Amino acid sequence: MASELIMQWQDIVRWGAEQKASDVFWKAGVPPSVKLQGRVTRLTDKPVLTPEDTEWLARELMTDEQWQEFQTYPERDIGLTIGDACRLRINIFRQQDTCAIVMRIIPLNILSIEDLELPEVLNDIALRPQGLVLVTGPTGCGKSTTLAAMLDLINRKRQCHIVTVEDPIEYVHRDRMSIVSQRGVGVDTADFQDALKFAMRQAPDVILIGEMRDTTTMSVAMQAAETGHLVFSTVHTTSAAETMERIINMYPPHDKPQICMRMSRSLVSVLSQALVPRAGTSGRVAAIEIMVVTPTVSKFIEEGKPGEMYSAIVEGAHWGMQTMNQALLKLYRQGLVSADHCMHYAGNYTEMRQMLRLEDGLAKDKADADAKKAAAEAAKRKALRRQQPQQRPDAPEGTNGAPPPPPAEPTPEQ
Image (cartoon, rainbow, N blue to C red; front, side, top):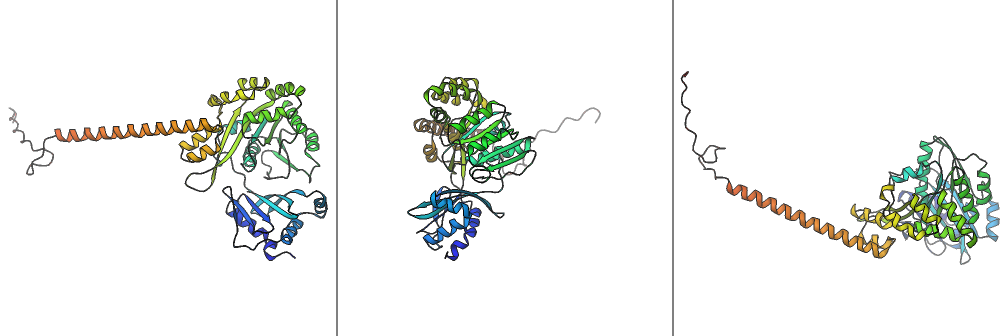
């Protein structure tokens, strides 16, 4: 029999959503835990969970058919909405012969690109008519939130059909100007390959693929982008160059030249994201490396030279491009992140250190120049005061102690 605590698991999830936690952990042998600001915190005021508790919760979250499948294949992803509190992306697995559960908390309200403090160029990328857009980064860096904001912008601005294929469905989009069809793998479709194959017959204008998992998925995504669709997806990489290398190396050597050519024509942008703790306060802010496929970048991709793209991104501010280091430096200048966190999340450690040294040097030079200017102005005001004659105590105010002027001569008319 499960304990009273585990039977009230939704209350803990609701509390976690109120505290803006990103995950809730259920593991036998420790109390329930939450991840706040990227750090796991145990709820020490709650009882320690037993194997019976976690197994009861796992059983409660699955249907009879899913539970039977779990006995032979102990991995299960589930999407679930908790009233008006939040939505959950749940993963159930076994560890040390006991059930364990991790619940990712997803807000019901989709924030806009402006609300998330993301670069404005993402608005332009989201409203492209066709092409492939990849959002990359490690697990938990906010890729799904960024994609949801871009899809919501399309939903509000375009009259089109948006099809998503996710495992499981995360953010739920309501129909606005567009029609949004969301398909969950294992619930609405058997797998990604089948869903993408039939998605092309569903008159889509925009397609979201939850994750690029294999060459089949990647090939279908490129084909959709080449045939006039706007395609979004994610990859677990940390930079634009690494993303291109990962995709190219997914294919055998004899296919790589053709893949490079197709990617150079279909790719629109790669957004590589990291969530950085805010300086002096709670919360995190997104730092995003942005690569836009310009003619120069397209040439590097076609020639299979992803390493050459970095210099193009550094010099591509006109197109809205920026490296991860440039993004971090902007946040540092705004006082949003600390120098230590800039170094921790830097794309290029040595370059970031030099950028911070130069920035601090410029800031010191500016402070010195401002101090000298203020001192010079103060000395000037003091000198002017010394040049002015002292006013006599009995002199009328405003005369500066000078004798009164002689009376005017009377005119003939007077």
